[in-house]
Each structure stands twice: as structure tokens, then as C-alpha cells.
Length: 198
Image (cartoon, rainbow, N blue to C red; front, side, top):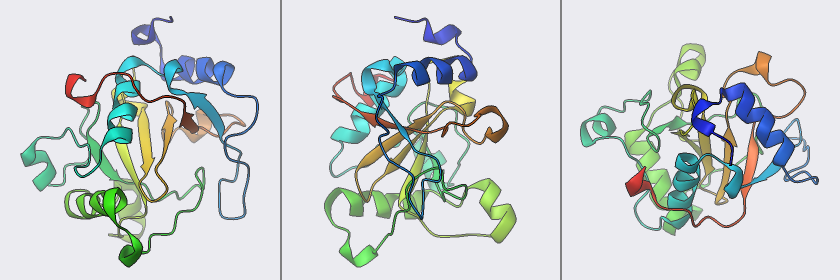
């Protein structure tokens, strides 16, 4: 097992590229992703991030959000705690597949996540500067963790409409990703611990 806590985000991204599935998890499509997304098994992720993925996967009625009550109510976005919801993800660079949110059609877990994200999250800071406030877009970002730069560059992005999870160690580091999509589709058994122990 690699010593994740000593890895930089670049080193973790390269390690994962070496471990991902040969067949793309999600091929290129008209509305995104513009670069194929490779699949990575949960077992290759740093433990804290794998536990977060497990907790999101197993959540039913109550969305996972490890921010404090005060942080949630003030819509604080830049929390460095692994498992903290940050903001909705607008997918401006089309790294991920296009998601259409049809609010009346949402029920169960997708509806719970949409309600929570709409109430306690906000427009990503970079998006706010460009166009002002937007609405929840089907994706929510979480702070990842478990390696040296995890809390600043790592993200788990949850597609609550289609119940899919994506991971990147190089969030918004376009110049560092090379020709590969910086996101991985997280696959495999999600049974490693839970968010309460992050």
C-alpha cells in the first residue's frame, strides 16, 4: 500500500492513472465529457476519500455533509474537512457528463441531495465572479483527503441525479492534468468505513 499521506496531488494522480481500468468508464460525448473518463476502483483511493465515497453511496435520506451547523447555515464553501460539502459543480470545462436536473422528477435520495445542496451550498466562487449566482446543477463537490494536498486540491464530485461519483486529485489545475481527464469515475465496492470516522 502506498504512503498516501506523503504524496503530492500530482503523484497521486499519476499513481491512479497507472491503476485505472483499461476501458474508459465514460467515453467522449457531445455534451461532455470532452475527454474520456477513466474508471478507478475505490480500493485504490486514499482511505479518507474511500470512506467518504462509501458514506455518500450508503446515504439514503440524509445527505453526507461534515460541515458544522454554523458552516452549513452560512453556506461556507471552502471548508478543508474531508467530507465537507463545498458547492455545486457547474461542469464549466465539460470534464464530466452533462446532467439535466428536472426538479419535479426527483424523488428519494436525489431529491434529498437537491434540497440540501440548494439550501446549504452555493454557486462556486469562480462561477460567481463570471455570472453571479446560479442554481444547483446535479453535481455537488466534497473536500477529499488522505494525502498531502488532499484538502486543498482533492474533490469527490457526486452526481446525485444518476448516483455516480467522480474523483480528482487536481481540481481546477488545468495546466497540470496533461492530456488525461483530471476526473476518474469511482467504481467497485464502496464498503470501506464510514464518514463518521473520517
